[in-house]
Image 1 (cartoon, rainbow, N blue to C red):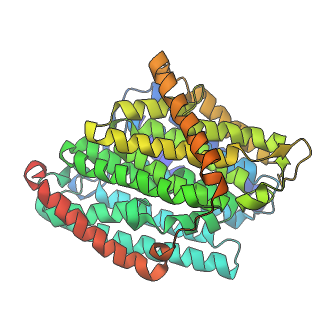
Image 2 (cartoon, rainbow, N blue to C red):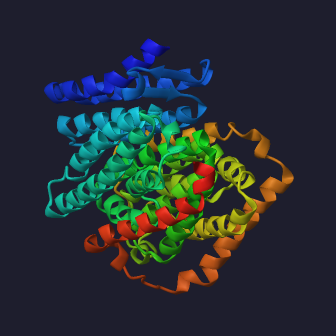
Image 3 (cartoon, rainbow, N blue to C red):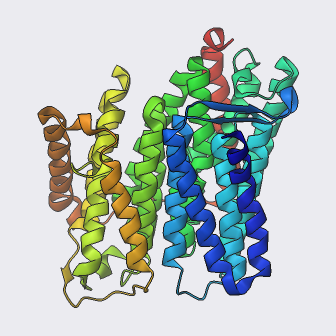
Amino acid sequence: MNALTIIWIALPLFIGFSIYLLPSICRYLALAVAIISLVYSFNIFSASLPLKLDLLDNFGVILLVDNLSSFFILTNALVTLGVILYCWHSDKTSFFYTQLIIVHGSVNSAFIAADFISLYVALEVISIGAFLLIAYPRTDRSIWVALRYLFMSNTSMLFYLVGTVLVYQAHHSFSFEGLKGSPPEAVALIFLGLLAKGGIFVSGLWLPLTHSESDTPVSAMLSGVVVKAAIYPLVRCTLMVPEIDPIIRIFGVGTALLGVSYAIFEQDTKRILAFSTLSQLGFILAAPEVGGFYALTHGLVKSSLFLMAGILPSRNLKELKNKPMKTAIWIPLLIASFSISGFPLLSGFGAKVLTMKNLLPWQVIAMNIAALGTATIFAKFIFLPHTKNGVSKETSGFYPAISLLLGGLLIANGVYYQAYTLTNIIKPLITIFLGWLTYVLILQRKVIKLPRVAEQFEHLIGVMSLMLIFLFWLILGHQTSIS
């Protein structure tokens, strides 16, 4: 298993660069890498875990494969495979597939990293690959959005790197476990870097513009797996150092409510989905013990929703109400919206029930409000008009990709089959009904535009500084337990 893991990590990088030299078979090579990752993820579930590799002792590289990482790796494999199928008959060049597979491999590396330096390298490679994917259309707009993303990513990683040096100075080790007993400024700097990189709370307000303005398959990759490369270490650190659990949960609740608050009033479909991503990342952090399963269901749902948003007749909800889509498009849109709202028979139901059962008492009311908000948001898609011969722009690769991702939602529904009790079923159904009622009676008739000043480029770094102060204050308050 050790040798297999090392080969699995190295293969995407080797194949990724080979793809660029073999343009005639670039799609097939990319597909093979994604399938190998899928097979490896299934192998993890049946292997004897955890698997820990200490490759360079205290100076790096610590790899850890267990049940938590298996959910994230499976998410990466399925989403990448779905994006490749979606692009199969498109005009995407070998350069696109090169960056796609390099990002895929680097995300896998982040999902098994258990030391801060290995994680830093993986996150930086992800940043470069994601930057090139965002800029792929080569329009002025895409290049600006890509540069904005790269600047925010590199700035957050500078904070992270300084914190990593302080952890090593305290323990002579880069292990995640070194957070315990490290100075508060080290924990604050590392957390700021990961929170900003992962699109969490106000420091993550770079995310909506980046995800909504990227090309459709790139948006699916970004929301489905890329942001989770920074969410995973936050969950991992929480499980390794339980003393930081309250801090992570605070940001989980705040992010869930912030994303919902923005998405409810949005009228642009891709921005709705981007703000929803921000909110759903909060659900992962609100209950770290079960964050892996929630990450899987969210990755499948959100990537499929972005792929569907890319073929709708318009991005504007007002226009979509006057341009009925094809029923064949509306049905998968309905299934995905049901899942993320927590409807039974789909994995989103089990993930939400499991998350709610692992909340602390002070989180319950806020997270139920966030769940109600989620149901309200996706009522916007559920109640859109549709006809058999409606307008759509689907490609030949659309249906295979959507079938794979939504099929994953149906199969993953069996992960937590214990959720199917009468009480557990009734509560989400009531929440969904109230969300639909809120949309039909209130939001459907009103258009409220929230200011975007907090998303402006010149304010994002200032927000990071404020977040650092807030983090330092939080950590000082928990300093006794952490140290």
